[in-house]
Length: 72
Image 1 (cartoon, one colour):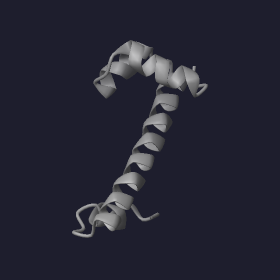
Image 2: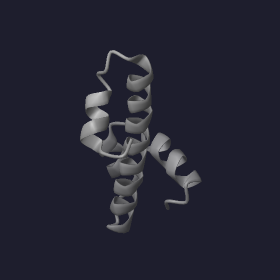
Image 3: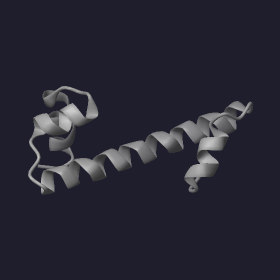
Image 4: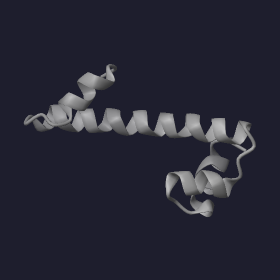
């Protein structure tokens, strides 16, 4: 599912196959957007603490997740 509007609509489908596929697509989109913004923040000199605060997670959690992805 590529179109974000269609995916969001499909997420409330009464058909579990359609709904679950939409949820999986939304999860992938969310991860992609989060990584994009973490990279953007790091490129602009943000600290891991600032990024963690923006994501409402601990500094350790965000650093661990993105250190493995090569975002430094």
